[in-house]
Amino acid sequence: MGATKSLDEINTVLDRFSDQIAEIRNQPAEVDEAFRKAAIAAAEVEAATFFGAAGAVAGAIYGAMTEDDFTGYMQDHKEAVKKKIQELLDKLQGAVGSSKAPIAFLQTSQAWTTLKGKIGAAQNNEVNNGNITGYWAGAAALKYTAARTLQDTAMDSAKSTCDKVAEALAKVSDIAWDFYSKIVTDIADLLIGLGKALTKMATFVATPLGVSDAIDILGKVISSTVKYTEDLIDALLSQRQAINKIKESTESQKGFHNNHWPRSASDDFNINSPSPEWQAT
Image 1 (cartoon, rainbow, N blue to C red):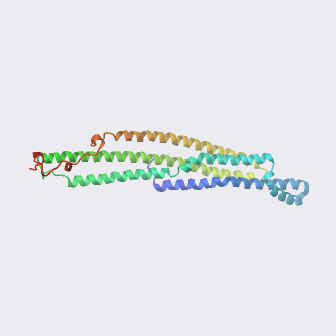
Image 2 (cartoon, rainbow, N blue to C red):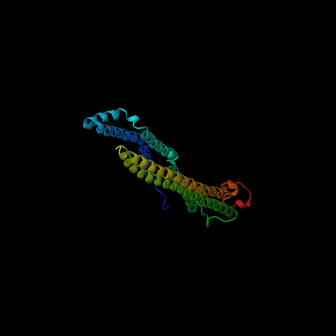
Image 3 (cartoon, one colour):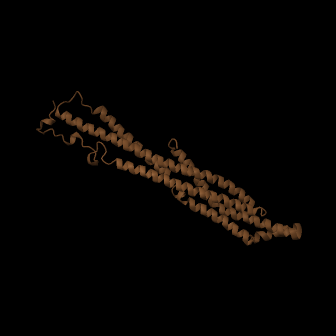
């Protein structure tokens, strides 16, 4: 899938998707308008046939007044197109409701990367300032060094976990981005095709062709939306398994005894202790 998509790339595709959904929601009104024009055109044709030019004017007025009665057959087809549009909106409802998910996944991934950086900074500070080699010897120094090694090991394990979680969440974000990218491409084609179909509907003569074209293209986008959704679910389930493996890998990590951060040497140090193990030499 390539490099992880940036926040700007995600926002761009989601903004486009949001605009397209608004356009689709406007389409039933556009269908009504196309059939209104077709009804007027039909009345003009009918009146002109019997009464000439004057009849065409009267027919147009009549058609405008009786557009909802424009042949039961065509009225049914108008409702069929509108029903198909609603079906598409229903199929896209989940995508609409989840449109912020890619952003959330990416931001959470970035938060884990930030955490890794903070752990790394703490580790670097410990490496630079915690070394006692050449300054301290004896049992106390050995005990300190052992505790310090455990701390360093735990930090390495924690950074590794941050990397794995960040990578998994970034991949989920990319999967979602790919899903929306495919949908917006198909919807763009849909809106162009639907515009052409509406033009045919409005002419009366080509209305049946316009209806057929609209239903065909809507059906294709509905089918592709269903497929993309199924692919998304499969990909997310696969990634969920990967995340579960990460969770399992955090159990008994190296440096974490009983899944707890290792104690520091200072927890055991007592300056007044008579024990020789804490006597510096």
